[in-house]
Length: 104
Picture 1 (tube, rainbow, N blue to C red):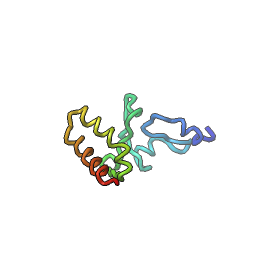
Picture 2: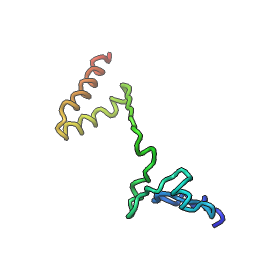
Picture 3: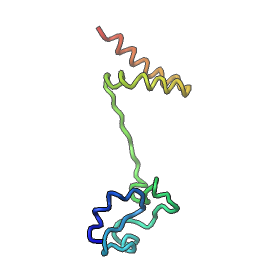
Picture 4: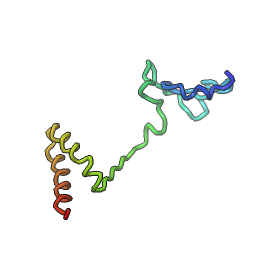
């Protein structure tokens, strides 16, 4: 194939893609930086190969301003109550009440 990179966007499930005549899988197995621990049995639809990222800790951060909490807070209250997590619902409703009390 003359332009394998042109088809790369159409690949949606693969453990690893080897582009072109000069990229044999064995190079990926041993020395190009990828690895040989790849998903099998169709699991590439949902999982990637094992890599250094598989062993890194990720920390997510969320930050809302008052406008953001006003917009999403009622939904959070509804969901928390539906799960029986009343303290979670109250953590949001208290903040919304404080905002309303501070409004002129």
